[in-house]
Image 1 (cartoon, helix red, strand yellow):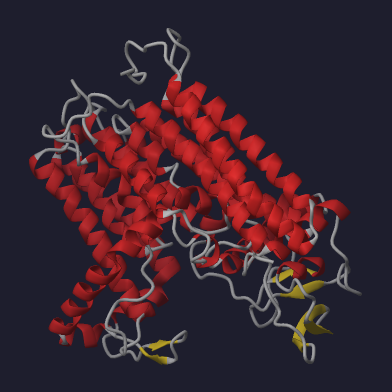
Image 2 (tube, helix red, strand yellow):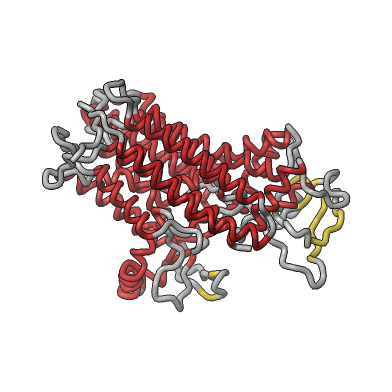
Length: 561
């Protein structure tokens, strides 16, 4: 049986490359029938042309990435840090196009937050008197695709006063991802700009959607894209796409730097960056992208200091401090990963005094950012007698005092959650519930298993590879990951779970992605050794499966007429 190419001593075979392209082509043809049926049902025959372009582009990119990952026989291999930026950006753009603007989880709130920061960057009015964010009048289209708002001019701004009588519900673009969403985007690009309602272009409008209360830094990449669109006077859809593209570019750049910095486990970081959920998120306005990027980089930097670099310099301490200060306020629970710094031997600092000072700087930078950004949130969490109300359920929620006073009840909630929802966490970490948590837009279960198998194969040791995480170091990383997972669940127990529920609500598998790579790195052992499959072939397979995911998602949306 033919052997796969490996990094050393590659054989001249290309069946894996051909199989990947062939499988994608066959499945692509299969789903063309779905797109055709949807196009005939709604009359939008251009869907078939767009699908053909998507499939053709996917085949070309998959073929090219196969050549980059597997290499020419006898030729020099590209490094993973050189390949990943192209792989992540190219596939990220496909996700960007297949999932239209504001179709991601909570994306409307993240979009509004980025828009607010963009106004500050451009020196434009950013908020109305009541604190709501101001947008260009024409950009109201993204928040009300059917034009159902009734509005009037107040203080020089268009303000929503209600909706038209007997009208459809005002919907955000992409909130429910259907063929009509594709049509609106298509017409926007065809016409150059959307049909404008009277008076909108000359005024700023008050968005009814609140921004996210977090560090403004998390929206810098998105705000830069929005600002560029506003400077060029592009329409609303272009504005949204450029904002998302800024987030994608940032994520790919930071993940590429993390792969370059990591002393080992580069293929695991690349694999984490090529999961459908990761790529899907990276092409949205979500601040999860900011967290993921910084946590990947922070992990790689800590491992480099712990296992590769001979001495910790002042610059290194500054990088760690800035990383935690920028990422920490977004979601406090990931602060647990600051414990990776303890993997760095004290001797690399020169003395205990320098180690203590460095630890104080990193922790102090995080604490200062937390106090400045999240002091009100922290106060609400730690006040044991504060009454908690869960808005979505219209019920009372748990408070810290209730949970501490009923330890058995708390333990039971955690047990029930893990027993009933672990499968859902696994599925949604890989690629279920894409879009706005849409259960229809998912990765098929066999493909989820294939992605999972790829991650495990990337994690297993190769012949001759030394084990880095052993004994106490491995246990310490497991402790950090378990603590971070527990903190995530506990935070959602307080913030999102009504007292009537017997499981913790609101936890999603994507929340585990920031610490997934370092956990996988600890799985290398002497019992399971990969002697056959090369990591580059596995990464190529992951890229090809992502190409299948995007063409399949396009076909599903095309049929939702």
